[in-house]
Length: 343
Ligand SMILES: [Zn+2]
Image (cartoon, rainbow, N blue to C red):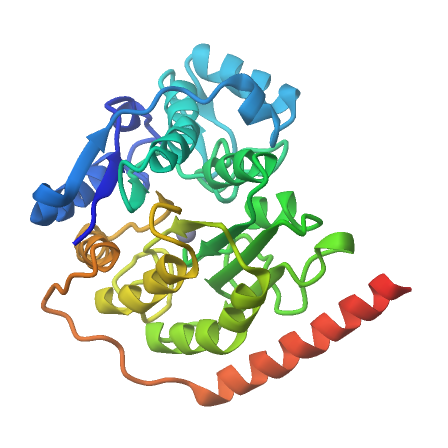
């Protein structure tokens, strides 16, 4: 059994996305409860805020300044989905800082993997826009820091929504391989199979759009068939998981059919893609509390190479027709993209 760093901070509980908002502080309490099953294998760490320079390596200074000012004035709605309060900017700085802190601690050999139990989430945040409950792109800020240190980064985004922010930030970046499974169509509407990256980044974006009701086992088959060969060729030195759990069948916001045990093989893909001590998971979505608790429990077990019974069976059916179709469409898009690049 290995060791997990678990990053948490009381400020994450004080960010308030609004009354009745599904992205609420109780989410972190159930994740913490899941962690209690592996208490002996866990080091709890408290992050420091990300330095402004690290944030602005991804986001425009104007976006960061406007967000900070708006929060410090008391906050309010940014768009119909996304609201902030006076604690939100500091929470977002700490959520981004948790990734940078984890990089340093993992480099010092403190653990095999880090789980960032953060709020607000990040993968929808673009260079200059907060959206979809996300303010700063936590995963992108960590990935940018890593490539600036000479690393090659796999980002595996298993949230039920496409990480449009992360995808756009790295669409032309050949040192980041962005792989996403997501329901399609669904908010934010991006993540088509034909989007394989742009310019020097052609081939380092893999979008696997899933029709409603797609099972977790089908997602696994898609990742193994389409993404895994690309991951092996890419040769990541670090892996970051956008760990959203809203693809669970009980999630109120989506219509996918993942079960908690389905997360084990998905997490294992990232775990096994890099050497021990080079894996970071950052919490994104997941809005049914019991599903979130079970799914994160399976995640922690997978990180520790342990087994756990959450009283739920894996989904069984693999939609082989979908796998074959997406494989064909992805290959065609990749060939088109590479041909365009060669001009
Ligand atoms: Zn989501």
